[in-house]
Length: 371
Image 1 (cartoon, helix red, strand yellow):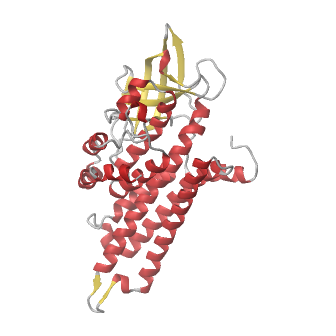
Image 2 (cartoon, rainbow, N blue to C red):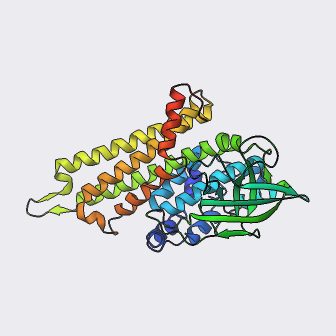
């Protein structure tokens, strides 16, 4: 893992120097993403036989956590890239896999739709076969890196088979794709999360990823574990960043009339202690989830369901406390915790949402089917 993080550290100055402007302007972090590609970070989870680094989920989580502490937008772009890459490693064409491994190709997921909203496992978009090609029609509601990625791992209803969905590899330049507007969000302002409409988009029949009707199994068996774990790492990175900034501010800011720092106040130390405990508890669950997935433990899916809501709610609580400890200074951008505060809220509403995951966890505990 050390070598992967060393490669990341070579580009962290570029990520960190652009982060404030990415947040302020809402611009996509193109230079940071380009640097990640050149350093081999975008090819981290690509197999060695196509030129990638052959790393796994644990290494990817460490990279995402480090990025999230510096720039939430860049981290989320990377999360989606790794999730889509996991599907392409299993079913994608070698040419695209090699481009990803070389850092020359950014990919992402295109699952959530206007009609089914955060229930991404139930696409309403259609696929129809004709003359060796497939025509896709869809209204995708939120696609990270929309208009910036080179390809989309795309969901639709099946062509002819049973099942809930089929996955496709759709090139960004396909005729009939329309990326709507710009993203002007509360947080993750540079992640280019925008709607995409597909109007009679034609792809070759061999653009299918996995079997017709097999999309749900790929979503649950491949995408969900990667997304849940990497989202948790994303939240943990934001929490750690907020703790570091809060502690730094609390030890530097002073009550001159008392000759004390903020950290000398017991109530502030109490809040900082809670921040540390919340982050450490989330990290413990993340590490156990990784261990469960790697060992194929019986409780692996339960851990996968738990880790994203646990980490995202920890990050929300940590950043709430950061704002309280830093007080009025927290509202100034130079302290930095207000960006953590805003970015932390994204994971709770990204599908599957925290409320949906609570339902799944409750079903699992009660021995009920998830769907």
